[in-house]
Amino acid sequence: MDPLTPVATCVSSIWTSLWPCYHSITFGSVVMLIYSMIPVIVPVLVLVKLLWRRETSSLLVMLFIGAIMLVCEGILKHAVKQERPAGSCDCSYGMPSSHSATSYGLLVWTYLEVGFPIAGFEIASGARGWSNPQFRRVTYLVTSTVSFVPVPFSRVYFLYHTVAQVLVGILVGAILALAWFGFLRGMVVPKAWLDKLVMLRPFRAIRATNDYSPRPLQFNSSSPDMEEMDQYV
Image (cartoon, rainbow, N blue to C red; front, side, top):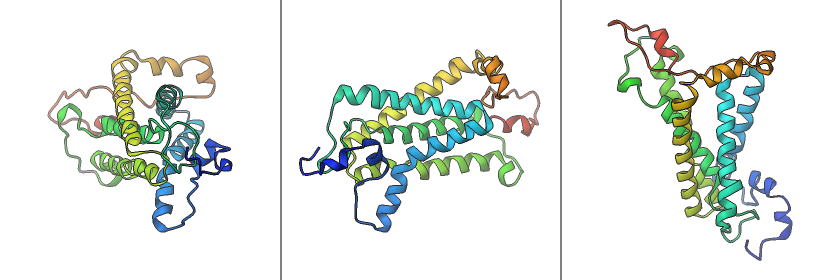
């Protein structure tokens, strides 16, 4: 921490990570502030959806974000112990950037889940709007890209992290997303762990449902059922 930084700005690292000590209010700084808070806003929205809908997809997102925070905040930052850039108003260690890891972890996971056609190709749908699986796929990818890509830049902009710290955060997030996706598709789905989870008494009591059950498509005819395909998009 820069010795010129007032001690009062470091009373609460949680607060300063939500609201940067940056006093010049411009259009650019407001945009960067919004992007800087996206890795905080997204878990809150997902948690609300989890409590409201009680679906396994939201639970998986929360578990993934928790794993990222554990790796970055609980392990790597305390192992590396690298200070944030001079002038930062956050007292905690900065390597790697957990905001960058969260944003790019979610981005890479989204691309893995919906970014590529199943079996290497996709059959065109004549449906319009949200009923069209291609339209939904593009919407998910564009929204995720626009939402998450600028986040690391915002952390550098507000002097929370150096360029190296956000780049390592991006790498950590991408690696964790690949590992998480592989774990879900290689272990959780084949072994039907989520189906078994929602059948446990506590989850039956709250009427939890499993909405994450992707599996390879079965093409038994020259005209596949598009409703069957839609569930994997």
